[in-house]
Amino acid sequence: MRPAELHVYDFDGTLYRSKKAPDDNVFWYMKPESLSGAGLPGFDGRWDLSFVGKARYSILRDDVLAIVCTARVENRPLRARLEALFRKAELPFSAVHMSPVHMMRDVPGYKVSCIQGYLSSFPSLGRVVFCDDEQANLDAVARACLAAGTPCSLFRGKGF
Ligand SMILES: [Mg+2]
Image (tube, rainbow, N blue to C red; front, side, top):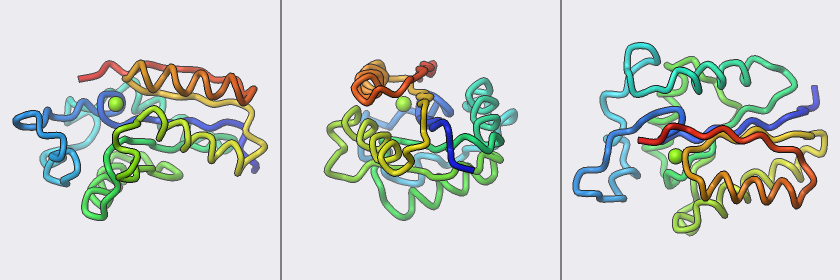
């Protein structure tokens, strides 16, 4: 079936309240160790069960493309760790997008370009659902969808 809606989930602060980086070292978030100890929704209290439930419903719908778009920087060990975590958590998203390193200082721009890529690849998409805890990301995606003439629903994660 051609997808009618794109549902985009952020990871940190939305699906999962991640641990803070020691010493506020942002590079820590590029390492798989930053997710050590992460467990299953319902057992590991860091998952936000309302977003987990929402994501599972998005994934089940066959008219929805359900993806993760995280600002964590693309690298193979961390991608393997994240994908394994989603598998264990029974969250088989269609795709997990991680930020290319050159976009790491423009997270709203990265999230918008990810969504624009889907809108141009799948002209059947008539609605975007975007879940994120950062107001700048929510604002940027709302503006981009308005410009594209695509209705958009925003849901704000609780943050850290
Ligand atoms: Mg976030």
